[in-house]
Image (cartoon, rainbow, N blue to C red; front, side, top):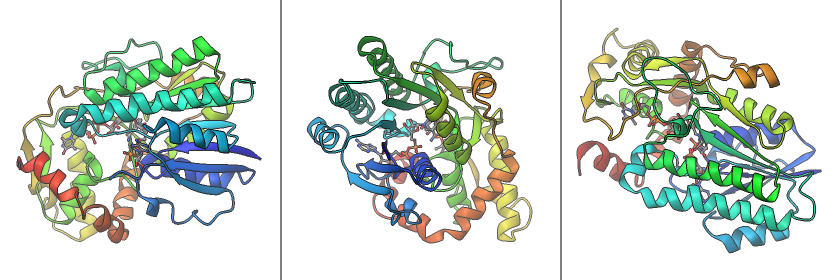
Length: 350
Ligand code: NAD
Ligand code: DAU
């Protein structure tokens, strides 16, 4: 039986990856490590928590000694590393938290892999999940490829770029089998409502203003989260050591166009008159250093490993809205507690 450590498994993407691996690979034991920050929620995994090939440990990856003890106790065959501070706006308010988790936390995991796997790196794998934001911003044309130079602009993307460099350095210096993938914006179920799509769904549902930064002209390339989890599965099993793959949806949307589509879906689902939800759109002060456009060229992944995105955006967005409307309790739980004070500071200046 292979033992795989998945970090950040209680978060948005991590929970989809954990679910996929637990269900599809009964001969793997999946250990989900998570600190359970505001973004981590074990309710995301309630459907698989009792499976015999799943266990959970609550650890902060900035705690090197806890990480080392875990590696000493468990004989991991591989790590799939997703734990991170992930929200750009929070990184603008508090960059240090991003350095601690995203950089120091990643180095702590790499150090443990180096120490506990050193007798034979050949059958081990350290797979680091990263973002397209490390490449910076595009103008009206062009796409990010695996060879695009790093040019991060936000504290979040700078911390992710730094962690990517450390992963490559540990591959090149110590010979650890490392793989990296850089993905575009994900959407789908269990997405924390600080991010654009779930925040807008929640606000439209509650008849609250939908804040659009600047003029809504910024472009993101959206990918169904389960397609990302499937790409991670394929890359984990098939990539050669030291490789990098870009993952994206070939699905670019200006924020304002995306929100208009979402408003239309919400009007239909909530039985509101056409145009009702769009009246909630409110243009607010732009994000500092706001990257204009991201677009991923995933040709390498498609050609070498045969992965392609499965869902059309309109279909995926409708499924996402359905999930949030059915899972009202989940939404209420994650927006109680300190969500309100975050929201007031971010959007109401208090
Ligand atoms: P998320 O914020 O929903 O989840 C992050 C998880 O990491 C949470 O469960 C949280 O509790 C955990 N965590 C945070 N700090 C920790 C620490 N110090 N120790 C242990 N656990 C900690 O994030 P997400 O959107 O699911 O992103 C997951 C990964 O994918 C991140 O590395 C992110 O950079 C990357 N990524 C995200 C997207 C996206 O669109 N969301 C796109 C590309 C790449
Ligand atoms: O590209 C991958 C990245 O996508 C991931 O690495 C990050 O972890 C993830 O958070 C996401 O980053 P973005 O900054 O692109 O996502 P966010 O949902 O915060 O914002 C999407 C776009 O919407 C962006 O142009 C900013 C804008 N926006 C966002 C919020 C929260 C608004 O206009 N209003 C808002 O209230």
